Length: 211
Image (cartoon, rainbow, N blue to C red; front, side, top):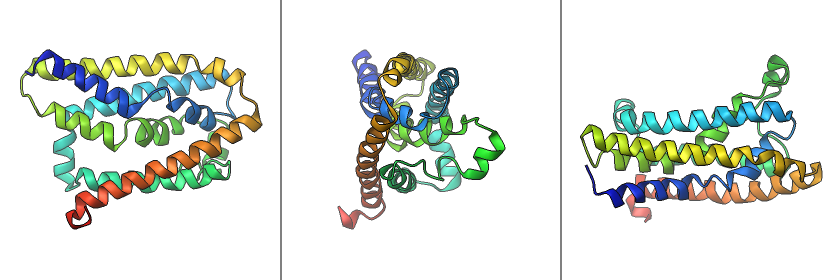
């Protein structure tokens, strides 16, 4: 078990990486065509998915990656490519087919819960950075108390995320379609930069000679 201040660092680090406040414009952009009740359900699904992803990563992440022969750097590159594809569509104020295809739209008849998992929960919130952070910190201790405290940090993060999403009706009531499109394009540009960083860092890890 680590010192108490180390667990505070874990929580602060996860908050900085996931950055719930900055997720609001992205969430609004991806749920602009759904009702308020549907948006609440999607938000709840996102929070649950983020919590489960990070908790599973804490317990099984390193073993799963090793089992499939996947390194965290490979995951960074793959996540970066996915985000880049979405960012390009967002720059055109469109939803990428990697998020929701026309066939899925027809089949689901207006249900958009699939975006709660990909891309909102993963890789935008519980992405390579958050997952790698959880895995690295989780394996700094082996006792049950250590894993319990890391789990508490994850739960506090999810509670914060839920509180931020609960304020989305206020944000959405002040956003017109034009403003949402503007936010979408701005976030698309930011996401493109984030994607390049993911890909660059992943490639540096895979090919140290590039560092």
